[in-house]
Every structure is written in C-alpha cells, then in structure tokens.
Image (cartoon, rainbow over all chains, first blue to last red):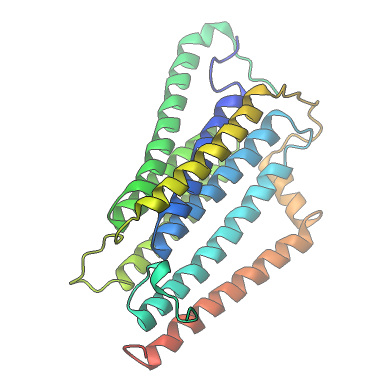
Amino acid sequence: MQPLIFGHLEPYLIVALCLFVLGLYGLISRPGFIGMLISVELILNAAGLNFVAFNTFLAPDKTVGQTLTLFIMGLAAAEAAICLSIAVVVYRRFRTIVADDISELKS
Amino acid sequence: MTFTFDPSLSLYIHLADVAFVAFGVLALLGGLTAVAARHLIHAVLGLATSLVGVAGMYVYLGTHFIAAMQILIYVGAVCVAITFAVMLARSPSEEDQDPRIAPGKVVAGLCVGLFAGLILGAAVLRTQWRASATVVEGTIQQVGEGLLTHYAFVFELISLVLLIAIVGSVVLARRGRRTPGGK
C-alpha cells in the first residue's frame, strides 16, 4: 500500500513553500537585524528541505541533495556568526539594531 | 522513488501519516511565531520549533544524518548563538521587543509573500513530477565518499569559509570592546 501523505512529493514542497513565504514576509516586515536573520534562517531551511525532498523522490543519485543540504547548513552557520557579530558591533556603536535608524550616510 | 509498504502495516502507516502532519504543523506554527512574535526571544524559540519540525520531515525522507545535523547545527548552535546576540544587543533594563513594526512594511511583506507563494504554489501543484530510476542509493557511507572525492574542493572551501567567519566574528566583536560606549 502507499502512504496517503508522506509518500508523495507535494506535501514536503508545500511545507517548504510555506516556510519560504513566512521567511520572505519576515525579512521585509521585521525592523531589527536579528529578526531579519531569523527570517533568513527560515528561508535557508525551506531551501534545504526542498533539496532533500526533490532528491529523495526524483533524482537518480540520492547523495547530491544530502551533500548540498550539508553545505547549506555550513554556510548558514557561517552567515549567522558573521551577522550576529555585526549586530553586536552595530548595537555598541549606535545603541540600536533597528535597520532604518542606522542611516549615517543619508544626508 | 516511491514508498510502498505491506498492507498488514496499514495502521502504522496511518499513524505515521498523522505524525507527519503533526511535524508539518509544528514547522509552520514555529515559523509563524518566528516572524510574528513581538519579543525577539519568542521569535528565536519559534525558529527552534520550526527547525525541529523540519528535522522530522528529514527523517520521513529517509535522511537521518541530515535530521541529526539539523538538530545539532541549527537548534544546537545557530539558535543558541542568536539567543546570545539577543541578550548582548539589549541591555537588561530595556524591553527586548522589536520596536515599532511599521504597517507599511507589513503590507509590503504580505504582498511579496503572497506573490511568491501564489507563483511557487502554482508551480508546485501544476507540475507533473517524474521520477527517474535510482542509481546511487544515498546511504551515509556514499554521502561521505562523495564529500571526500567528488565534492572535496567544495568541502575544503566551506571549511575555509567557516574559519574566516569565526575569525571575522571574533575580530568584529573584540574591536567594539576597546572603545566602550561606541562613538
């Protein structure tokens, strides 16, 4: 017998799509740096889930998606470390992490 | 690839379906909390919940190693790092909530999100996905061999990027400390 839900590709894609849309919404609507970073993590996760789902169901070589997802995780960790230290430095300098308030170059 | 099971296991398959839906709901509710919570620390908790839900999906896809790495790297490392930043970037006396979410930004975010969601959702639902025959099975041993042969260069590049990121973040965070109080 075939499982009703988890044996098909579409449920995984829909969950990943919802996570991606949520991340996109958060990236635009969040005022602070850290809120934006959280949204970016959601988007990267949706991408990773998509890679593994497509790879498991469709691709002939089942190692590619797992490898790519591992790379995405490594890059996301590096990106989070850099972004967080930038947020800390910006907070020390400007006493705020609201992205719109940091506009020294605007005349 | 298709999942096929013995019909005598149907009860367990239905239970597994229910658990799959539960993981999906966990991922989506966590994501919703992560983008909509007023307090940043609640957003981090929502992110962790969402990541655990996605890890459950990885288990259903048969990639247990990725699920374990998801929990270890994302929930264990990235979320803890974000929590540290939330605590460092706000003095304890201050309220740690994201200030003034502008209504214009919310509308813009909704528009962009709905636009992308409609286009991608139509693409997901209307495409006829065709599977090709499995050539490489995708066990963890084969993934490891691929990392050390086929993708060795990318692997080394990622380790270099991680090293630079660590050194860079240490340098960035230390430089601010020399002049306390900023400008």
